[in-house]
Length: 134
Image (cartoon, rainbow, N blue to C red; front, side, top):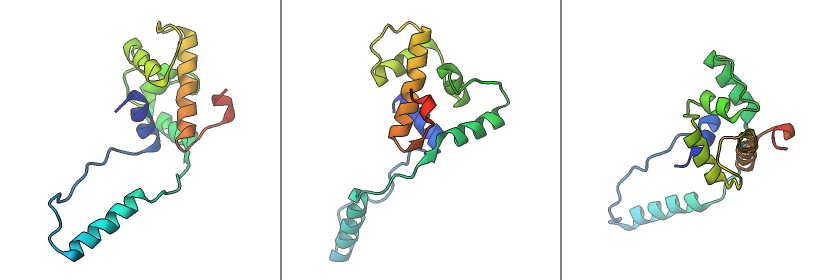
């Protein structure tokens, strides 16, 4: 799982779901029909529920107790999410998100990262204000 996926899961409140169940082949027609019905529900498109990213982050910040500028700082956003905000982690996130500049932890890189994360959240069903996307 990539760094962005971890961030998205922390903000959206989703956890990785382990697959469970018997993987043995069905032994009768009823079991085969049930398996086919279950498989068809997995491939049926579902509407993405919009997540209020800012409300979730504000709730996390209220519970955190630290004074973090997560609204514009990628370092503080990562700290708020309980993630490692080191330069190495930010470099990895930058590479994951396609940053083309120098991976030196510059203000330019960090500002780009914050906007790219917010844009990625919006593209994945998050409600993010326009001023955090530009």
